[in-house]
Image (tube, rainbow, N blue to C red; front, side, top):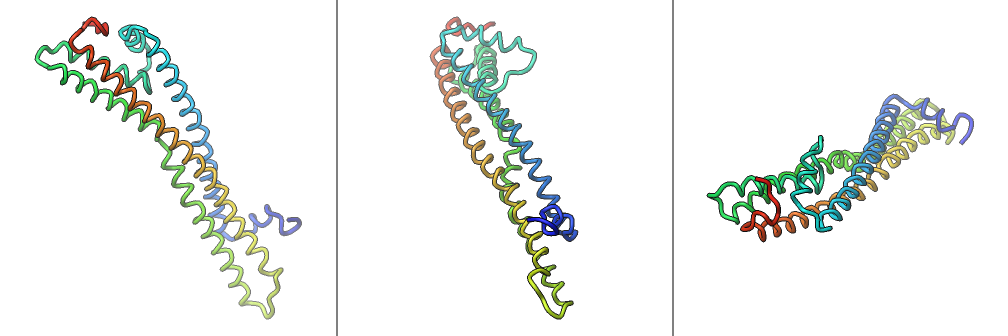
Length: 232
């Protein structure tokens, strides 16, 4: 569109409520894109770290050495490495208690790993609810701006003797811009939410599988302290 009906001129000429709706949708869109890029980096790193740790874990290395390497790091390990570190540490600590059965030791290590996994899932799922909120509410916010703009246009017709399409076209056009902005904010947020929720779910399955496999290792070695190299 050109002239007085250019998109920029329509936005600048919009009523205060419609401008407020457009501003809110613009802020929601910018915030959701920031979350999208941040979550993309976070999940890419989490998947890469899980792949690397699993490759190292199943390469036949001494688990005690893996534990010592993780414990020596300045930052607490995250993801699968963090689950392993917490479970191995708790397994070694409980093994020192002669009053506990092997089943109790393994169950204690499993609980420690579960806590670590829950913390990791909370970290991965952070801000996903924001994307879902933007995706579900933005079209309705845009629709509110559309309804307001059209209503304002038709109310203004009550003050004229004869109505023409040129009189209501700007108001209707600015109202439709609000709808378009609502869709512009919602569509990427919905796509990103579905994609990232699927990736988080897949990571959770991988973590659960690893916990079961590590618990089986603990179960087999619960009567043989030197097998897993637990440091007293």
